[in-house]
Length: 141
Image 1 (cartoon, rainbow, N blue to C red):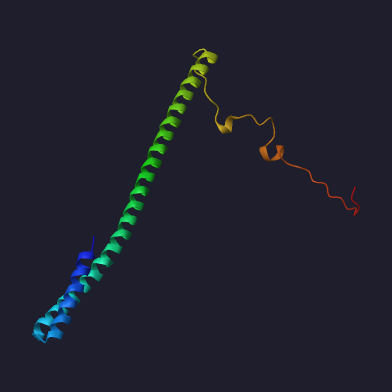
Image 2 (tube, one colour):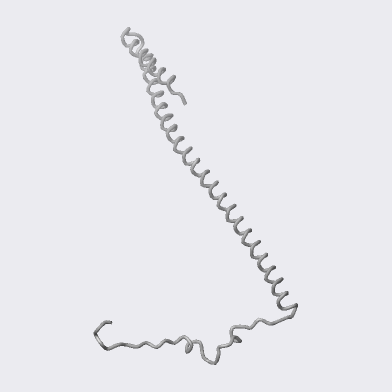
C-alpha cells in the first residue's frame, strides 16, 4: 500500500495547526488538526506493521504451498514406484509359473517345508560347529 499520500496529509495538518497557532486563531481548530495528524500517524504505523506482517505471511504461505507440491510429487513418485514394483513382481511370478510348468510338465509337485529339508544326518548346529585351537606359546610367527 502506498502511504505517501497519508504522510503528506499528516504534514499538511501539522502545518495548519502551526499556522493557526501563529495567527492566533481558534485554539480548538489547531488542536483538532493536531489530533487528526496524531491519529493518522498512528494509523500509518499500524498500516506499516500490517504490511510487514503480510510479507511474512505471504512468505510462509509460499513455503507451505511449495511443501505441499513437494509432498504431492513424492506421493506420485512413490505410487509410480509401487505400481512398477507390483507389475514387475506380477510378471516375475507369471514367468516363474510358466517356467515351472515347462520344467515339471504340469506335474503337481509339493514343495517341502522347513522340517522336511534334508540335513544329511547331522543337526544344523553340529554342521556349523568350529574347532578353535588356542596356542600357549608367546611367540608370533
